[in-house]
Length: 261
Image 1 (cartoon, rainbow, N blue to C red):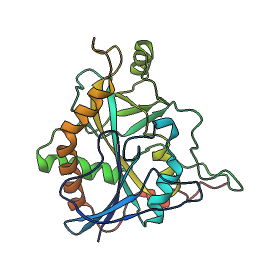
Image 2: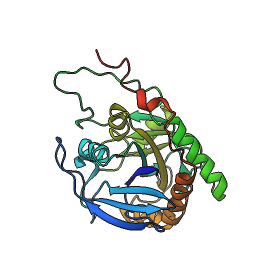
Image 3: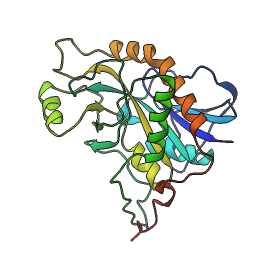
Image 4: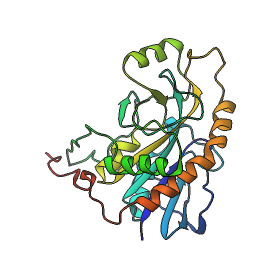
């Protein structure tokens, strides 16, 4: 049986079509995860779901215990994670409701615990390609099978938050090559890599980034557009599960090979 972890973002707190089995609370050496892990089943696959902001939505992005969340998935026996993130669209042509499957990250966060190796080990993981290439390929193939239009690559720039960005910052980000901006993509991706887990993101453009349109940015817009997209995201993930091979054949499982000093 395939087992997959799903990290839910703002407005994405559950998936339709899953048969709920149980809840499990996990303790980790890094503190408590954002909440209980919801264990469900669909089409012969087991899904372990965790909303990163908690239920109700109470944890801001700069206070999420990213290490506990990723470590908790490993404690649950998960080796592959799909992450759902709400983002602001920067690149021309991206509009609210669009789905992006990113292949690159620019990390501008500060002060977040971004490694499991802080004591005796010195580890430098290769992060050239921050997302699992196999999971990304599967998500894109699933989108084609479901007739869903997705942007099959893109650069996700991650900021600390919790405030939204200035017009000048978004202009700067655009010049740096960023397609979207969000607050939760890092350090999730690099922490998963340190544990040799596969990790890929499904980004939902919930609003135009600051200065791209004349509208005032509001959390209401973010939540409404994510709610509208929930069914499409769930359908995409379930189809991705159907395409997922039992064995991992990507390089993620060997991420620590040659990484320790």
